[in-house]
Amino acid sequence: MDINFPKHQRVAQSVALFVLPAFCVLVVSMLYGLNLWLSAFLSLLAIAVIFFFKIYRYRRHHSKFLDSFGKSIKNSYFYQSEYAIGAVPFANKFLSCSARIEGDNLLFGRSRHFRSVELEKIIDIEILTCLGHEVAKLEIEDSKDDHPLFIPWSPLLAEKVKFSNGI
Image (cartoon, rainbow, N blue to C red; front, side, top):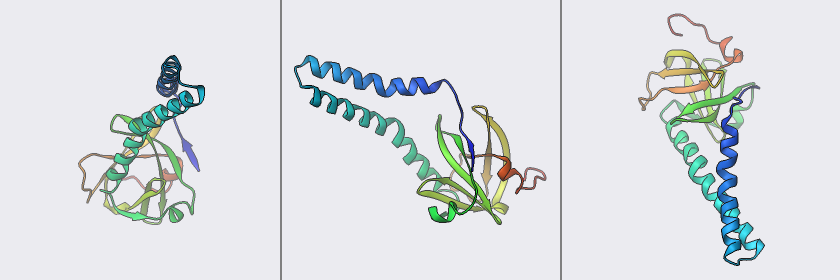
């Protein structure tokens, strides 16, 4: 497995995004005279709500976006061989995505939502740098979406794809 995740300064901001509201809920609930256990429960509830609205929503939209490419495959089939995993841009955020090549098919996606596309249906591959790592911007022939698909790029994929005028 080739892991391609960025190390950047937004991690501290992400931690603050979860810890600060939870701390505020804890302090306010204790000021209103609630006991410590109920205050802690309300803090955890605040973290869960923030998680849903900030993270889960983008994962769900990304899964729907992936539906516009190729056909669905099972998790067990995807994980049978070596794959690359990394952060890719989607809707001004960065989400994890996995990719590998099996025969004449490109397999990509995220856990519980993998897709397969034939390599000959890829119109263009553009290698870009995203957060210090390489990602591939793909244009696929029969896609139902106008937005490009990004997948993590690695030597694992590069050795199996022959480039000539884009591909």
